[in-house]
Image 1 (cartoon, rainbow, N blue to C red):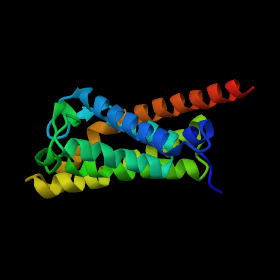
Image 2 (cartoon, one colour; image 1 turned 120 degrees about the vertical axis):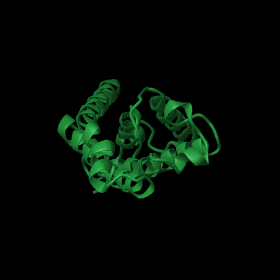
Image 3 (cartoon, rainbow, N blue to C red; image 1 turned 90 degrees about the horizontal axis):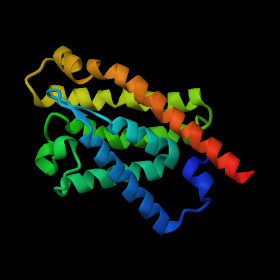
Length: 190
């Protein structure tokens, strides 16, 4: 059974204009979260995965996926949407390229899990945010390993291990925010 994410519960049929506004707002949220960065080499620590989890948890699979494609297209066009204010295609083919491309799958998978019943309650939302966030390390580390002289073990140590605790915290924060959103919507409907 397919469940509606928070945005569809708010607006049964968001329409083209509202959907466009959601995509634009979501892509800009990811861009802003990229600027909150702890410089680490070769992969900086940012708040992007928190923003992507929120988008997936509230938009659903398709709209979340489209939002992250829009984010990548804006960044590829040269807007300073990537970590450290970077933009352009050359940045996308750098060490973080696998993570950037994986963002689309992460957003889609998070929304897909929500649509399949992990849409209410802290623990369900936490799982819906955490599992795709963990899977993001597959393309991220694989890309890092493929385009740098790092061994696979070193790529894992540089591109995955330092981010695990932050991933748990960001998934919990995203779940708490969305639980609050559902409660506010239910209170408004009373």
